[in-house]
Length: 121
Image (cartoon, rainbow, N blue to C red; front, side, top):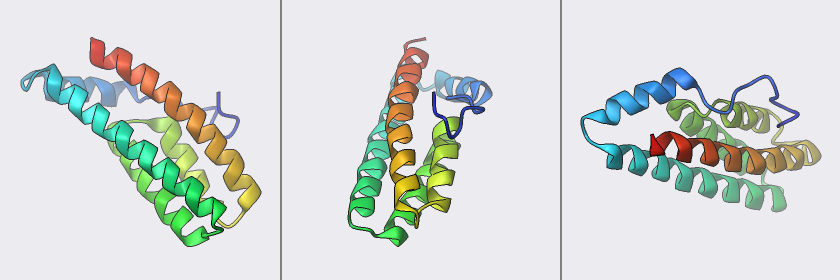
C-alpha cells in the first residue's frame, strides 16, 4: 500500500457501480474498452512522467501529473488520483517525485488488478 496515500481506497466503489450501470445497456465490451483505454492512457502518462523526471523537466512532470489526476478521478481510481495530485505539487522536488512515481507504478498494478475483477463481473 502507498505510504503517501494510505488513507485512500484504490477504487471508488460507487463510481464503479455507476460505470457498470452505464455500460449495462451497451454490453460488457463497452466497460472493457473504457477500462482498457484508461489503462493504456495511465501507462503512457506514467512513462511521460518518468521521462520528464529524468530530463529534470518540472513543467512537463507537473502537467502530466495533472492530466493523470483528472483521468483517474473521472473513472474513480481514487488512490492513483491522489498520488498524481501529490506528484503535481512535488514536481520541482526530484527525490519526492521519484518516490511518488515508484508508488504510482505499484498502485497502477493494483488498480489494474481490481479493474480486471470488476470487468469480469
